[in-house]
Each structure stands twice: as C-alpha cells, then as structure tokens.
Length: 230
Image 1: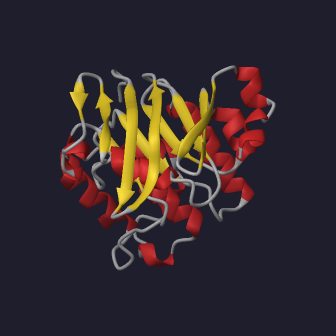
Image 2 (image 1 turned 120 degrees about the vertical axis):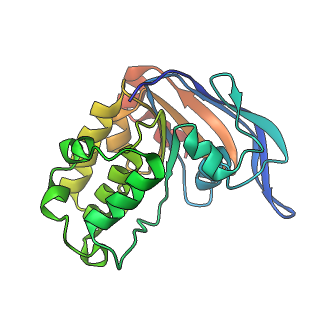
Image 3 (image 1 turned 90 degrees about the vertical axis):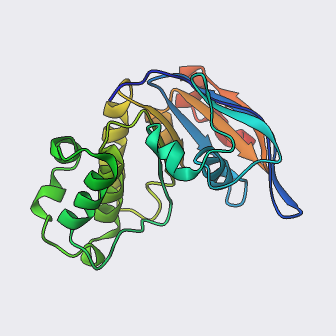
C-alpha cells in the first residue's frame, strides 16, 4: 500500500431530494494520515463518505484525490482508483464463509495475497471456514476491513468502525489504524472520542451538515477539545 495523494473536499453541498444535508463542507486528508470526522447522529458524516465514494452526487463542490476529480464517477470507478469505502452496517455475505468472502474481494481486486489481512486480523485465519453470518460484530468488522485491504488501497473511508463493539476489539482496531497510517490515507467517521484522540492526525467536527472545527494540533486532539464543538 502506498499513500501517494491528498484527498481534498472543497465546498461540498449535498442533498437528498429537497432536503440538504451538507453545506459548504471542505476538508483535506494529507497522504498517509488519518483524519477523523466526528459529530452526533444525523450530522451528515455518512453522507460525506458516500459522496466521496461516488454513491451520491453533490449539488455543487469538488472531491479530488491527487489530480483526479471524483465527482461524477461511479462507485466502482472510485473503488478501482484505490479508494475503498467500508460501510457502517457491518454487512458481509452471511451465507458465505470467511474464505469465500475474501475470494470475492480477491476476484474484484485481482489480489489473492491474504497475508496482509491475516497480519492485521490474525483471528480471521482461524475462522476461514466459518459462515460469516455466525461471526460476532467485531469479527464482521475485521472481515470488512480485511476485504478492503486487498488490492493495496490508497484511501480507506471507514464509517463508524467501533460502533457496538467490545472494548478489546475497539483497542485492536485502534492499533490497526495506527499501523495503517503512513501506508494508506484514512478518513474515519467515529464517535469514540478516546480512540480518535489516540490515532487521529486531524479531527473535523461536523454539526448540522457543516464543518465547525478542524483540529490539527496534537495536544488539542489528545485533550478532547473537539467535544466542545459537538
């Protein structure tokens, strides 16, 4: 994996029909860093990720990765550029085994080297023949991230990865994110502020569809200053 371009959002306005959700949102994720997007439910965080990933088309504004403009591209085109979206719902192919889920990801990406998956999530190797529908929430999250790591992604867009998970799994995911930094660029929507304080290089606070604060000072991030904006 290589982090070879900045992810830049400029003046993004997004609506569902007549209901506008994002208002003039701008942010930047430098190569090889982890940006956290925090805010209350309904603030527009998932809408932001879905727009970057190509599932929603903005009313106006730009989304760029390096020199490439992402607006107007289909989701599969964005994915082929190395920008992977890991959704919030922890949805896997429940009737398929872990092995079969990984094979589908290998087919889509052309990458059959699962060593990177097992390096970050060794538990999955022991679960290869288990039906994914019988995995715990934490194991499903590992599988979703593992699938996304195949094909050497340049950018990972991860939506609420720790929601509803046990503290031990949350801690493990924090270690994975810390290790991924420098190898890929990450934009993570997360409400676990202690985790954000540990792993984020920049924190964007989103409130009612607007970015109301951008924290880049490490001490401000570690001290939990962002909570005052939520």
